[in-house]
Image (cartoon, rainbow, N blue to C red; front, side, top):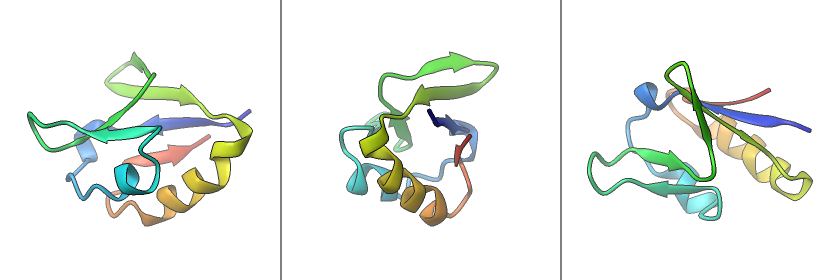
Length: 73
């Protein structure tokens, strides 16, 4: 099973992730950055396991993120 690693400090708030996968991402109204839903916070980064049906969408989002703040492991 793959997982998402989200480096929130790299996020510029372009909202590509939230538009393509609103069940995984939402935009924070406070600072305009993305929030990874149902994520675990460790060492300044966020982690979340992916369901098999989420993988293709997340691959596209990973490639589209302009700052590489989103990576799949």
